[in-house]
Structures are given as structure tokens and as C-alpha cells.
Amino acid sequence: MTRPRIVEPGATLALSRRTTRRHFLLHPDEARQMEQVYWYCLAHAAQLHGVLVHAACLMSTHCHEVITDVRGQYPKFLETLHRNLALCTKAYRGWPEEVFNKRSTGAHALPTPEAMIESIAYLIANPVEAGAVRYAKDWPGAHTLPGHVGTRVIRVKRPTHYFDPKNPEWPEELDPDCGSVNDGAVYGVLRRHRCAMVGCSQRCLDPGTTSFSSPVYSASRSSAVSITSRTLKRPWRAAS
Image (cartoon, rainbow, N blue to C red; front, side, top):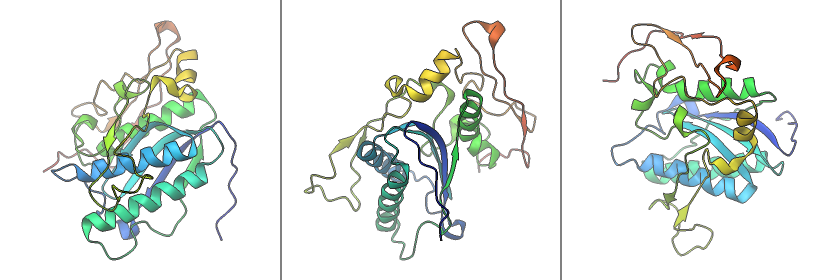
């Protein structure tokens, strides 16, 4: 039985879900259709359940999101997101089995600005920490970069797989408000503390090192907040 979750309207959370047996079912493709599928499913679930998406990253075997659960409906949000993402992935890949493993989605509350920044920094650096690319900006799949937080708005068209264009439930275009300046909750907190995710400078690893750091600056540099460097489990390796 799944453990009961504490659900509070307005809570900011870090979410993650892994594919079954870590199959590379979500890996990026040259046509970027998997990226389109993910953004569309994320936008649909976010709009349906009143969730604000601040950052997201789709890896080959798992996905990460940082959200604010405005209405207190994030379990329903996860159900909708993962169901549609799984069904569309199965249609696109021709995959006959389950897409996600049977373990519950990882969901961790982010009660402080430092926790929010730490979680977003981890999400941004995930492709680097996994050894997939040298710099986060080089990850070819769906991802968020430091400059996107609080500014980026993504508009995505309906994928050609699974979603019936005649069904009004699936609009031709959706907007997940990923990092929109109107999302208020996380971005407002960061602004009130005058912090912004810029230190990575579109890279999340210093060349020649195995240390990841995510410094954060403020308009008043004397009050800057910095996050302790996180040592990677293994050195980076360039994507083949």
C-alpha cells in the first residue's frame, strides 16, 4: 500500500519518476518528438490541476519537475501526467509493457528558498551528473537552464501520437507556464530573497573538474547565497 502523502495547497515540491527496469524509453530522438510528448503531457496535467511548473528535465530513464501545487491536487497531477506520458510513449515507441516502475513517485517538499534553489540546481545539472553531456545546455531532451527560471514560457503543439485531434480534451497547442514570471510561488520567493539561478552560466560543471557548484547571486552581491558544491559520483564524459 502506498504511504499517505501530506498534501497542502501552495506547497512547492520536487518530483521524480523512473522508467521500468531503467529502460531508455524517454531518451531524446532527432525529431524531438519525445520532448514534444513530454512538454504536452506536462502542460495538460498542469493546466487541468492548477499546478505551476518552475523547472523540468526529461532524462532517458526518468523525469524531474519542480512545481507549486496551488490547489492541493498534486497526486492527481502526477496521475494525469504519468498516465498520458506512458500511453503516448507506448504509442510512439511501440512498447507493449508498462513504462514506469511500480514504485511511488518521489515527492519532496521544498519549504525554504535554499531548498528550492538546491532542487532546481540539481535538476539543471542532472544530465551532467549522469555523465550524458559535459554541459547542461548540451542535453538534447526537454530541460531547464538557469536563465529559464522565472522567464521562459514554452508553447507546445499536440503530438501526432495517441492524442485524438477530434477530442476537445486535447487542444492543438498548450502552454505549461514553465518558469513563467507569473508563476509567483517559487519565482516570487526567489525575488523576495533577491536570488536567481544564474551562476551555472548555461553550464553545470567546471571544465577539468568533477565538482558541481550552483552559486546564486542577488542584486545586492553582499547578500548573495551560495550552495555547497556537490561532488559528482563519477567524472564527466562527453556524449558520444
